[in-house]
Length: 344
Ligand code: SF4
Image (cartoon, rainbow, N blue to C red; front, side, top):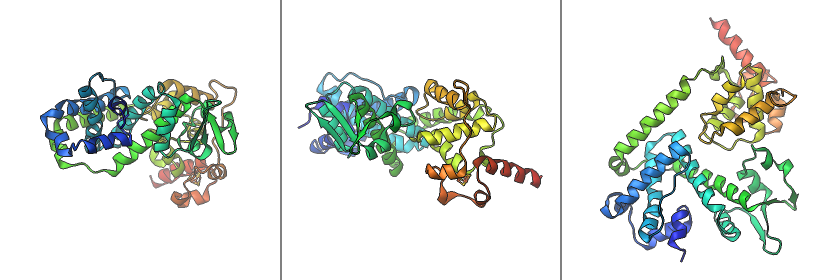
């Protein structure tokens, strides 16, 4: 039997679901029993905190009652998030849960992290004699935030297909795996009318805040870029970044160098990235300035179509007629402009 104090901190674990099943707590009770009123309030608080602070937040977990309410607030928050029905909000909420879990995980034992990693089907090995942790490279590539320099494969040691990682790295990889899992689960579920009716005022309030947030972003002028004329590859990378997906470094590199070639300045490029739910201004600015030559001696040129294909970032199944005639994403964009002007 897993301790209640533990599963209240990690309500996404199988043991947490098991606790709810074993205690016969029905969805109806979660939603309308006065006993769980506090859990419902906390569920909404998780969502508000995730949206404002990218972390679902800390609450007192001293008593059994505190812990039960915290545990139950998680499925409630998820049900409401589905009804808010906004991709940006859902991504932001998933990030808030994952970041919160990470902050707790770094203080747990390595064995505990290994157990969670196993629950996420991550192929992780822990050598107790040497205290070394390693992860199978496929899982590493799938979940590690390789957009950051220290996470790039080139900066990691691989032995027999396994990459050595630290305790903190493993917590970060679990953060990403959790974020992806929540994103997928939220996308798969449909809003329940009962949930909508019970939380309608909070749902409308949050939808409204998201709408204002979106408008503020969209109102910001972004150079002369016309996103409708972007080639499919750049459209996909930009959409993935803005939705908070884990875009490989090459994708980010291709997009930044492409936008730089279109004469967008660094702030304009940052503005495009800033809509991502996991946007970190300082790190992104560093990467952008490096690629555009502001903080390095080289301003990199964007890769051509052959290179894009080699790196797997040309969506070959989505390419258009125009793609067949062009060998560089920039040529595609310029041709689109010409097509448009000739129609006028
Ligand atoms: S063919 Fe070139 S321009 Fe078209 S999507 Fe692929 S990389 Fe982009």
